[in-house]
Length: 116
Image 1 (cartoon, helix red, strand yellow):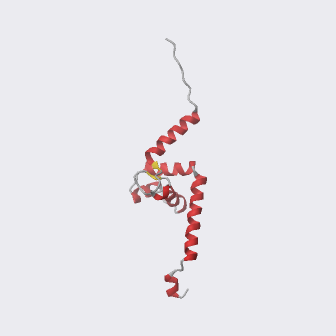
Image 2: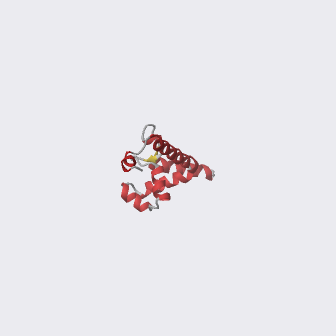
Image 3: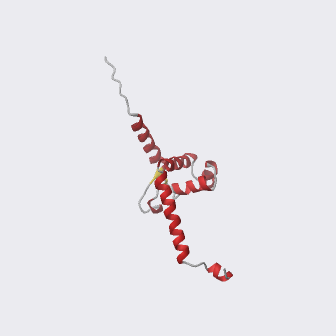
């Protein structure tokens, strides 16, 4: 009997492994969390995890404990971010622009009371 050896493309294997990983831990649902990628079963977006980890300096353990998700969820969110960095950074910039526009259109009642 002759043995048949099948070679899989390493890039294909990586993509399938990442799809499986993201499918278990990361989901995108239109109408939920603005359609942004999020931790499966939660409203915690990949963007949230990125801000907490990269900008506020929280560790993966701190994020998992504070927000009731698993370490695997946090690391999957970070892996998703690194694989989709350009689009997530753009989304963060877009969100910041919306906040800036809202602040310009809506004066602070607190600042008005203080006379600032």
